[in-house]
Structures are given as C-alpha cells and as structure tokens.
Image (tube, rainbow, N blue to C red; front, side):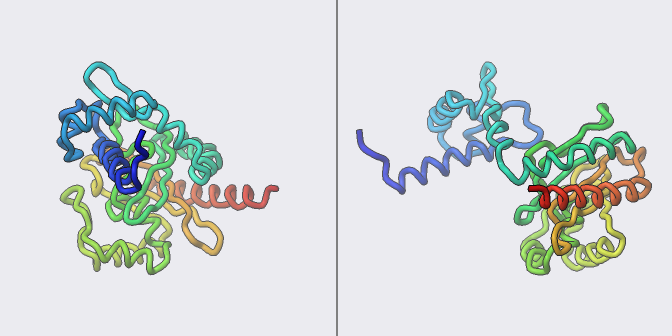
Length: 255
C-alpha cells in the first residue's frame, strides 16, 4: 500500500477542515449536498469524508442529515486551558445566572474572534445566538469588546487593521468609533452590546483579568432587548468577573 505524501495529507486535512467549517451556529443538521456546496467540494468527496468521520464519531448521522459528532465535544473537553477555566468559572457563572435570571457566557479571545467556552442558560424562552465552542467577531460582542479594551495594543491593532464585520445594522464597523468605545469600557470596567451580534439580543460583559492585568476571559449576561436592561446588570457582572479572577489566581497558587 502506497504511503500518502505530505502534500496529499495536507490536502486531505484541508478538505476535512472545510467540512467541519461548513457547519454554522444555527444549523440543525446538514445533508451531503449542502455540505458539499458550503465546503466548495465535490459531493462524492464530501460523501466519502463524511462516511469516515461518522465511523470515527466526529460526525453523527440521523437519516440523511449530518451533525457535528459527540467525539468532537469529548476532545474539546480535554483541552487544558478551557477545561480548567470552565471548572473555576461555573460556580461563579451559576451564581450570576441565579442573580440575574439571564444566560451567562464565558468567552476567550482568539485572533479577531471570541470563542464561547462555557454557557449557563437562563430564560429558556429566549433564543441565544451563541453556542458552546461557537465563535463570533470580537468587535460585535460585549465579551469581545471587554477583552479588546484590556488587551495589549498590538492585539487591538491586529483586529482593527482588518475590515470589521457587520453582523447587524447596529454593529460598529468604524475603527475610530470602536477605539472610542474601548476607551470608555476601560474606564467603567464593562462593555455593553445592543443588538450588534444578533437582532433582539443585548448583553453586558466584563473582563476576567489575570497576572499583570491581562484579560484571560470575559464573562457576560445576555437577554432580550426591551426586557433586559444591561446597565442594571453591569455591577453584578463586574463583581462576578472580579470573583472569577480571584478564583483563577488561587487555583494557580494551589500545588
């Protein structure tokens, strides 16, 4: 049997990655044809890749629909930084959820996006735009703006040097206006998002600061526009972020 060359292996990896990337945050299963269209790959290629991924439990199949598999979640649980972060954060997040009765998110910054590493659900009738492991453009979210406001200048510059994605008509896409908002966030310690990542959703977030004042994560509370006042929840969110920062520092000091 011929061993695949490095070039061929990279090509296969690119195709598998394209299949995974084809799944969106709001998808309720995808057929092979739609996966092929989104991944820009031949249907026969996607069908073969999907069969292999189902066999490895990296995709799940239900009839003619494919879903991200449970093994991906299992692998994600073993990633050390998010796993330890979640362990420290969940008690704080649960208490914040109980106080506000709204959904609480924990996110980290990766390049120009935020990735949600923990969610404690609040109002079951409110549909959230974020999901575990999902990512959104940092400038369009309260957690992202809270993280950027306290990040090093070079981190912020890398985000602002590219085009700012407009998720809704309310998203800030002007770099100068965003810089002004980041300065305000540093002053008050919390960021507010008003339907910038999803219509009908508002949010307030604060950074969780680590050694030297660098942000390691951001914690937020989100709710429905018109019924949830983010300004009223801001003090509780700032207190939760501070409490989580203390817990993380204590965990680092524990042998």
